[in-house]
Image 1 (cartoon, rainbow, N blue to C red):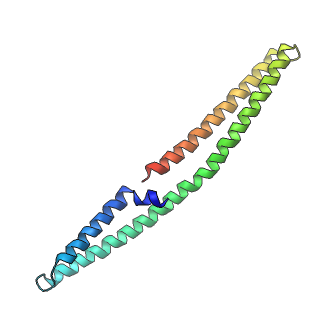
Image 2 (image 1 turned 180 degrees about the vertical axis):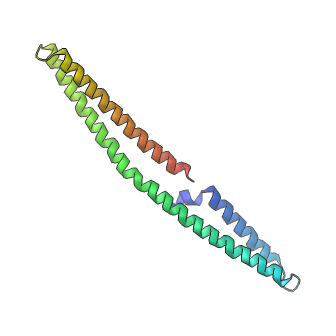
Image 3 (image 1 turned 60 degrees about the vertical axis):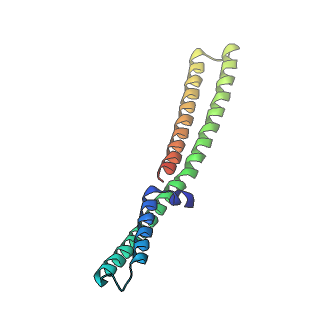
Length: 140
């Protein structure tokens, strides 16, 4: 997460602006610059430093929230995958019963529908996880 914060464009821009102001302040000679100019520059530095701290805190909270969402979503993917595997096994068993004449065509179609629904749930869970993951990466 620290890497994501370090690479965030807005934070980089504020850090660079702050360094530029500090550099400008270092160039000013107090014996030749007006006191009001020095004070104005120092006020800008303080203000920009505060803005940087606030933005960093805000982004950190947002990143932590997004990162915390990933674990439950990944568990959902694994659970949906297990449900899909179980539905595949049930369908295979139902298909064997149908071929042996122990089950109706309707029973087979119902198991096929359950299999397709489980597959859809698995794909939706993967999509939700990937959307959250790439949303986290894109937030830098």
